[in-house]
Image (cartoon, rainbow, N blue to C red; front, side, top):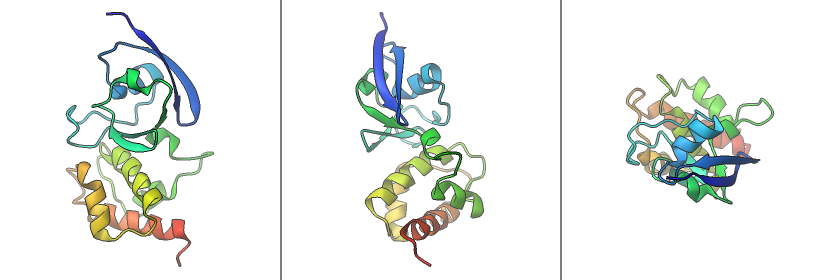
Length: 159
């Protein structure tokens, strides 16, 4: 099968790659663009390890074809820090030890950032609901919830 030329914006930069029409966006990001932060945990959209934003919408990149990114905007974990500065969520995950093996962390951070852009002051229940599509086998989630709450407070400028 012939490859298709795809031009997209990834983390603010124009990117071009050749994709097999059957390749997932996850595989294209990892294999053609060199962004390996998003992980394949299940390949069926059940674990959230591959979460990215496509035109601002949170998606499992294992369920989206790479060719669907044509002309669209993709945001990955690699675009979260700016100018060498960690995003508040990234800092708070470290401060609260909200990660262990780290496999699920990129997807959770992308999802949490999407939440905080929609809701600057989420409750614990709202955070748990929003992150329900992201599975973590190591942390038990409590530290994750606290880290998101702390980051949200900092981003709002709360004392």
